Image 1 (tube, chains in turn green, brown):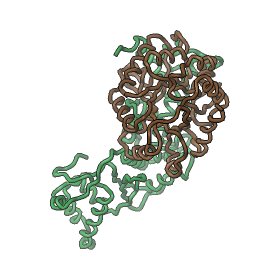
Image 2 (spheres, chains in turn purple, cyan):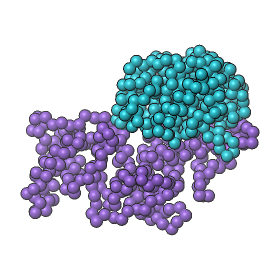
Image 3 (cartoon, helix red, strand yellow):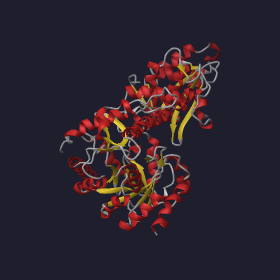
Image 4 (cartoon, chains in turn purple, red):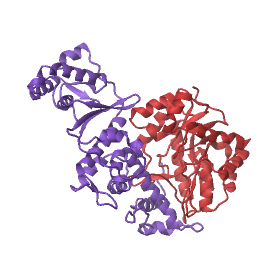
Length: 296
Length: 272
């Protein structure tokens, strides 16, 4: 295969730099600044009629950013609405500037956005635009983790669920359960899962109020089903069991759970634990057994 | 379902908001076009939906990520995935755009123009021909809507487009809305563009809606019904080279499926 024409490399470097130029947000809307584009591309772009070459390049500059803002908003809908789309887009702009898209797959663009927020949102939280209000850092990051969990479950590759045989039952106690990538477990300190479910009923782009803290954290499992993603509330001990199972064999996890269990509940625990495990198998939480601890 | 459809077929771009209606009513549409990249990932739900659609309708592939005119070599893994998908759905043909989308390791997720030059025709044609060979089925190149032109160009867009199609042995995936959009943005006569097309080599024609911005630039937004001026251009194309398969794209502010089908059906009266 022949190589590209010699000029193409430089042309695409210049044009690419122009369209990746961050949009300014200081005026309260996102605006292109063509004077920041590389001179080399401004010189060769042609005007047409009343529309200048800079304005024509700016169409591509805006398209690049607003397309990626839209992708990140779709991937992190709860996170976006907690701070409103304008503030969210500023965060998205910082993220994309530092992590420009590398893949043909636009759905990969949001990968790592939750980790980026962990590393960049200050202790004081996220300041809302044209307001003295802030969104508390921990609540904002919790929302980002919940959105990220949804993405992971949706995008997980298809895998056959674990259906234990008699042989499996014999070695279950000394084995690790391998969790399916199509399942996510997490806890929340505010009713964010419920808020996320209701986002469709709250149209608009403005920030929505953060709900008050729950008296005790709530635990959830997200499970991919044929018709979509199911959200399953977990009892505290059930959530603890699954947490232990991430590191321990089934037998050891059950022993530790029993040791942590209040005396008054201990007699009922074995039957309840069996029910939790049975339901998790039924729902496809696991893909098999492993003699060693599975990689997380 | 046989993968072929008549030469005058009317097809729709498959979009998620239409799944519910589609799976309940299975409306009379000759074929569907999928955005290839939406079905290449590992996620299960798109694959399940695709299986249901392909059990009833022929499917053609339309890509946005080939990066045919990018300075870097073509992405072999991406091409493998497209070939597998085309084989899986037994696509009568595959299309992508005559453009570049990324360079120097960055993907811009946009369909970007370049100067129209002879050396770029040679480069694009060689790569397009190789893609078609690898696919083992017809490969069509779509003309862009563009918002800027460059002083290095030594020919018109239609001369460039026809040059690449001719030299590559590939086909046109002719978007008449894009011709109209570019003709308004760059002040050329769209009829002259159509007159340069060898309709024997047209795999499919796209129609779509667009938006005029306050400064007069027309942007290819696919968020409205087809404009009257684009229907008029479509009629001219049909007179010049019909029949050809016609596909309606609607990607934003998507109305219910019956409305989109009604818009597609307008093609019959326009070309009558």
